Length: 370
Length: 241
Image (cartoon, rainbow over the protein chains, first blue to last red):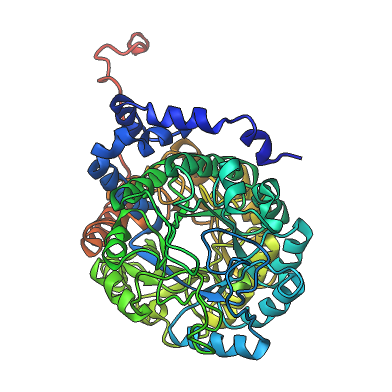
C-alpha cells in the first residue's frame, strides 16, 4: 500500500530548508512565468528571494483564484464540542497540563449550540474537540454527526486522528471533510511540542491523510502550525504532502490552512512570520495549486482578513467561538486560543460584499453523497 | 445559449447578466442552492418568465449518487430536466464516462430529460443517444479554463454523427469561441465562467448573445469553403473539353 511516509523519508529537513533559502531571483522569475508550477517552483515562491515579487504574485493569485472559484467566499463556523484532552501540546489552551475546567457538550447542549449557529446563517459547521478517546471517541462522533447532519448542509471535523475503519463509519453519517494538521513536519520539534499523549506519535499523524483517502472522504484539510518551526520548510512539506495526496486519492478535494499561533492559556507564543510573509505564502500556494481551498480563520486581524479575501483565499470562518458551548450554552468557558477578529458573521458578510465578492453560505448538500 | 449561475459576485449581478444574455435555460447546482428555502438567494433571482431551470448534479462522484440527487432536484424544483454531471476528479472536473452512461440510462427510464456533460468522445455520444438522452454536452476544454474549442476535431465528428442536439459545454472563454461552435453546427453552447468572472458580466453576457446569434446565422447561411489556393487558371482536366 502506498503511503506518504515513503516519500517523506526520502527527504531531509535541513537540505530542503537550505535549498529554499538558496533560491535566486532568477529562479523566482522562472516560477512566475510558468503556467504549471512544480515543487521546486513552490520553494522559489516561498523563499526570501521572492519577497520583492510580492505584488506580482498577488496579481497572479487573484486572477487564478477568480477563474477557478469566481467572485465568491465560503463561510463556515467552528463548533467546539469538548476541551477534554489527554495530550500535552505546548501551544494549546486545552493541553492536559493546563488546570482548566473540562467539559464535553451533551446532546441537549449540542442542540442549543446548533440553534445559535444556525441563527447566524451558517450552513457549514466544523466540529472541533481535543483528544480524549474514552469520552470523546468514535461513538461520541457517531452520535453527534447523526444530530448535526440534519441541521447543516456540510459537516467537517477537526478531532484526533482516527483509524481508517472509524472514518469509514463516520462518512455515511454525513461527514464531508476532515482537517488534520501535521502541526510541524520537523520530527524533533514535533516531539518537543507534543511530549505526552497519543499525539506524540509523529508517524501515526503523518499517515492520517492516507487513511482518510483510503476511506473515501470528500475533503481533507492539511496545514502546518506557524510558530513551531521554520514556516517556509514546513510549508514546503505541506505542499509535498498535498501533491502526493492529489495524485493518489484523485477523487478527494483538498484544503490548506496556515494558522499562526495565538495567545492561549499557558503562554504567548513567538511567531516569526510577518503579514507580508503570510501573504507571500498564500499566493505561493495558489500559484502552485489552482484548485486547493485556502482558508483563513479569525486568528488573523480584521485588516488582514479584509484584504486577503482578494488574494487567493476561498473560505473564512466568522464570529467564531473556540470554547465548548461558546455560542449559547456557556459563553465564558475556556477557549482554545484567543481569536483576533471578533466581528459577527453579518459584519463579515458586509465586508465581503464591499470587496465585490458573494458570501457563500452553502456549497455542498448532504444529498450528494450516499 | 445555456448559462451557468456560479462564480458571480452577487445574485443581483447574476440576474442582470443572465437576463441580458437572452438565455432561456439556466443551470443551477444543487449543492449551491437551498431547495427547502423559499428565500434562497440564487433561486429568488432566477424567477423570470425567460428562465427555465436546469438543475445539475455537480458534486456527485458516481451514478448512484447522481440518480439520487436528480430525484431530489426534480421534486424540489419541479422540472424533469437535468444536466447530468459526474466528475469525480475535483482538479480538472473531467466527467466520468462510465458512471455518466450508467446514470443516463437509469434516469431516462425514470422519465428525466437528460442532458449529460461529457468529454468530446464521439462513441460515447452515440452510446448516450442510444440510451435516450435528450442532447449531448461535450466539452470544448476543461471547465473554467477559458481555453476555447480545444476538442475541435472531435466536436466536428460528434456534430456530424449526432441525431440529438449538441451543446458545447465548458471551456468557452470568449464570444468568438461561442460563435465558432455555432458556425460549425453546434446547436447551443453553455457559458458561465467567461461571463461571471469578467469585469463587466452584464456586458459580457450581451457579447456572448451576439456571438451566438452571429454564429447560428452564419451556419444557416452556409459558410464558404476555406481554400488554400486560388483556383488554377488552367484546370488539369481542361484537355477533356
